[in-house]
Image (cartoon, rainbow over all chains, first blue to last red; front, side, top):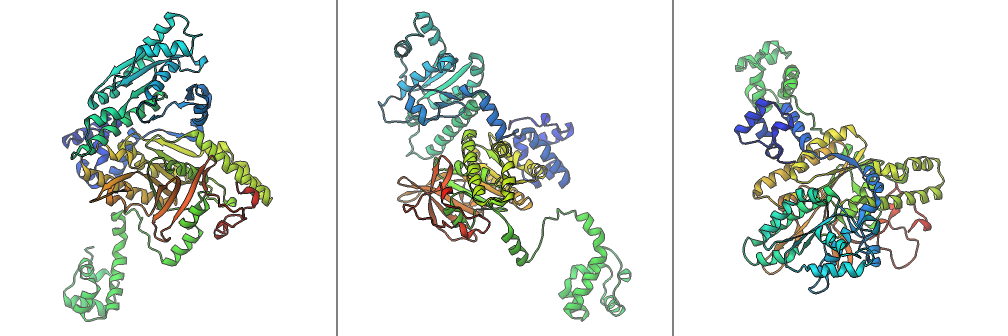
Length: 253
Length: 367
């Protein structure tokens, strides 16, 4: 939205050309300038600049919705609001399970079972909606190489013996879990950025990143100068992309 | 401005003196100023001022049109301001301790900033305020609508439903206790659906969308003139990452702050911002301070800092032009933002009598 070209914001052709001489081509550049600079650059009067500003803002401003519309939308599809973890007390505390459309973070000291929980969630996500799943694919970004496919099959077979009664069903399930092994921060970020198309293509319903901390701690030593800023830069960029994906597709992350 | 002195309606004696001193056009007169004029011609300062005012009035007809100012500069006496402030409403937070230290609640026409560590309750308070601003006037509210600009995505509709339901129930209890006609009428419009449909929600993903939205806000507010609260949840989030040019960031933030002040004043609405905390690493220890730097600290009129003390949530009024600095404890219950219940079950006033607009609550309403 921010990098929208000014041409598409319905500004006149000569205005766009004039602005591009000052290297202002996107809405972001336009809105970052102060009023005086805008007047100088466009050569227009105060009121004209205000009107231009409104036009450009309208091109990239978000749409308005009332809280009531949001609630109606949610109530139309109640089952898709949460992914139940099948642990009743946990579901009770979370008001239904892992919420769709937002980021959930699982932290613990080593060995408590985070990866096991993630594997379990992947199985649950592939189940059909009638059994409490999301009936979709899973993207699993593994940074510690801790994902074991055998364990996945073991969990599936033992937990839902009635459903996974045949090998075929198990294979079908494993085929819908896409595993990516990334070992550096940069590749994790690149992978996250490229997820949008994959989600649409493969009908993904769950994204798991296991784990963010390990790859960040490996690369960024906070005692060194400048690393703190870079680290938080990487984290916030990744977080905002993931938030966008979660909200846009209404899936849990 | 180039009018000859002969055409101006000045006294003949004065005109003679001005001609003797060599003044020819009105512009020269205005440039000299009253003190200089009185010294040159030999008249008193008051007479010089009078003459200048006459000149200005004559020439001002065309000048005012070309200046084309926005007319936003109003000057009024402090008495007028006092009357205005006293009749102004506050948006209550349902936590009477917090209302007390704020002087009645969140003030209209002022920018309030809420800073705190993650998870301490900033978004909860914002959602509570978005519901509380809609309380009808007979129950002590301002009967307005709310604009919620979300940059972090932490707005949960289900939670707002809970808070709104608790608020409606609270008003029902008051109405039953008071048994007045206006209460019943107001309750008919104060339903869950109405509350939710008067919260206008915008989801901004980066700072460009936020800037664009704030530029468009005055127009939106003139269309929806009942809006009395603008919440920007997470003003720090889009500005904290991906900004190499810190001077640009400061400039954008200052411009944003100015626009928000204009919006707050022109539309008599309260502006509430939430900010994150960042660590400042000092010589020997590190402290948590509000994010976005020192210059941003000047933007907000009232600053609240939320923090933890073991497992108790505390709110500190850090900066306020009219109230003193104090700390209170609060709770977040399933009904929303509330006081910490005092251990003794005495029907204490809890400071509600301090606000004359609030009806006194009876025992059964203190949930």
